[in-house]
Structure formats: C-alpha cells, structure tokens
Length: 264
Length: 258
Image (cartoon, rainbow over all chains, first blue to last red; front, side):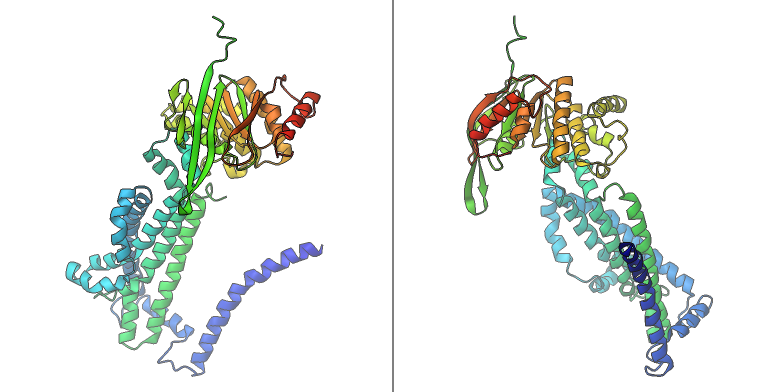
C-alpha cells in the first residue's frame, strides 16, 4: 500500500510545479513594477502588457501595424527561411554522411561558414538583396541550415555498421543501403534537426528584422525600443517566445506520431 | 551414378589466414591456416570459446572480410564479396526497427525486385515456418529476443540462400528460450534442408544441432584443433547418454565449461 501511495503522490507534485513557477514568476514581476521598485519606464508590468496586447489587436499606433500583421509577417519570413533550410540542408547533410566525395567537397566550406553568426550576414544581404523579404529569408535560411546539415550528416554516420554489413549480405547496392537503411535510421536525428532549426530560425527572426522592415515581431520590438515603450518591447518578446513554443510543441507531436515505429 | 550417397562439396576454405591491424600498427593474427570443407545439406557447427576467430571465419565465408592468405569457394566459385547465396544470421538480430516483421522478412526479395505478391507469398511461408504467423504486422520492439531471432532466420531463408551462416544466433537468449530455439532450428532444418554453418561457444548446443563439430583452439590466432562427427538421430535429447558422453570427450579437449 505504501508503494502505491508514493506512486500517486510523486507525479501530482511534479505536475503542479511548472504552474507554481510560472504564476510565482509573473506575480513577482507584477509586484516589482507596481511597487515602483523598478520604474515602469524601464520595465512594463504583465498587466500593462496584456492591455497593450488588446489595444494592439486593432490599433496600428505607434509602430504602423496591428498585432496580427506583425505575427503574420514574421511567420511568413520564418517559415520561408525554415522550409528552405530543411529542403537544402537535410539532403545535403544526408549526402555528406554517405558519399565521401560530397563530404570532402562540402565539409571545409561548411566548417568555415558555421561559426559566423547569422546576423553578421546582414550588411552583405543588403548589398545582394536590398531590404525586402528575400534578405530576411536569407538570414533565417543561414541560421536554420546549420543544424539541418549537422544532424542529418551525423545521423547517417551513426548508422549501425553491422546493419550495413547485413544489408550487403542481402546484395544491397550502395544506393539501396543509403536510401533504405541509412536515411530511415537517421530519421530521429533529422527530426531533432527540425526542432533545432526552428529554434535557430525563430531566434534569428529579430536579427533579420533589423533589416529595414515595416512589420514583424522583431520589428515591433525594435520600434518599441525607439519610441521608449517597454510594454511594446515586452509584448513583442512574449509573442516571439509563446509562438515559438507552440510551433515547437506541434513539431514534437508530429515527430512522436511519425517515429512511433522507430523509437524503442 | 551414386550421387545420392556421395557428399557434394559446397564450401571449401583453403589455408585461410587473417590478421587485423590494431591502433598503433599492432598486428593481431585472428585465424591462421584454416582449411575446411562443408558438404551439401550438412549441419556444421564451429565450436570455440570467445575470441578464437570463429566469427571472423564466418565473416570471411560470408564475404564481409577478405582473407590475407588462402581462399574460400562456394560451389567451386571463389568468394569475392557478400552475396545473396549466403544468408547470414547475426547474434544481435539486426532487424530494421522501422519495419514490420513481414517487411523485414521481405528485405532480400525486395532488394532483388521480386514482385510484391510473390514476395508476400514467400515471406508468409517462412514466417509460418518459424512460427510467427499472427505477428506479421508487429514491429521488432514488440517482440521478445527469441521472436526477433526467428525473424532473422525467416529473413535469411526467404532469400533462398545456398548456405545459411549463423553467428552465435542464440547468444543473447535466456537458457529456456535458447533450448527451445535449438529444437526449432532442428525442426526447420529438417523441413527445409540447407547447408548450415553454425558458430557457437556452447558445447550442448553444438552437440544438439550438428552433424559435424569443428573445435577451434581457445586462443588467437584461431586454428582448428579437431573435429567430431555426431552420428546421432534427430530430434536429440540434451540428456541422452550418447550426447553426454560426447560432451565429456569435448570438454576434456577444451577450456570450455558448460
């Protein structure tokens, strides 16, 4: 009986904990601003942010666009860049893992580009693409492609060598081993890349929108800073955080569904 | 004229040696001057303790390793690489975790572009043979160790190899399952006769299964110490007098105890 009691109590405690920490965090935040411990010119209270959010749903002042427009612009940019980084990064990484020639050709260049922070590309991007959507997508693409290449590459490289031997004894060709064995067994790593790349893309959104823009969540944050409105800055930050978490959660669920057979 | 009584040579290993190069250019001779003939439909057991080169010998026959000296022939043709005429069963099963039992068994057929309906029919035959009917749509992680190895055996059979090579196939199973799988192996072999080379470190298993036992020296480089003919009718009993007597004889001749 005592055994059963422990089993019930433990998870309940653990389910409550995250809510406790979230509530405590916002309560403390509200308190330090309301009491004037931190002046509201430096930090907006959560209640103010909620009010600003409601206003911004239909009001385009002071930054020139409503919340919906900002969110939609950012999602478009982020997803274009994200999709491109998956489309190019994953096949490239998979090929680098299996074909020695591709690895030999691409690895040095990739290793050179990898450590450069994506926002360092902003000036060149302006020269090349001007200040439109293309430039922003390019920055996000650079950010997302790195984890795609690395994870797919490592995923293929980690294929069980005995499994490869097994396939050879069944007369499998190199191409068959690559497509029917290495790629499926790299899938968990590739799905890891979907998550990682999304994080990289989404977090570089703000940087990409430093490029002249007229809407977007990153732009909202920048504008909030320029017009000295901490509530707008915090609102933008929270939106980037929450929507990023939601998209991450969705991908996680898709991954679990698709990989049900692979994960043991 | 009397080809039925004359054993037909299937596999010949002639003076096979293999040395691996370890880190720091250290040479490790793994097998030395192994010569061995295997006849059609013979159940040959290669018996030896761990680290005696028996698995390497099997890999050389499978074509996954090339010998440094000597050669291996199958039906008189030299072995130059792995091929579907030799079905290898691994100790660690080596199933595709993302494929069902049926798709795993169909692997070799699919790689050779056998049409889907024919593939399915052949796979079903061998799934039934190893007693996995009803589990066709299960994934490997839903199966026990013994069942996984049944899939491995069905997969090898489905590819209709001339020779079955089994590398300590029951090494990861518990004692009960292991004995059961030995009985099953005998049953399957009698049902669909193949030339079998079965590697094990277990004397009981060797005696229970083999027509002939090749006993390896218990140290590297691996050499053949001696061989025994096991002329006992099947199915055999682990506790029969003849088996126990032979077991005592082999035990006296090796460091293996079990």
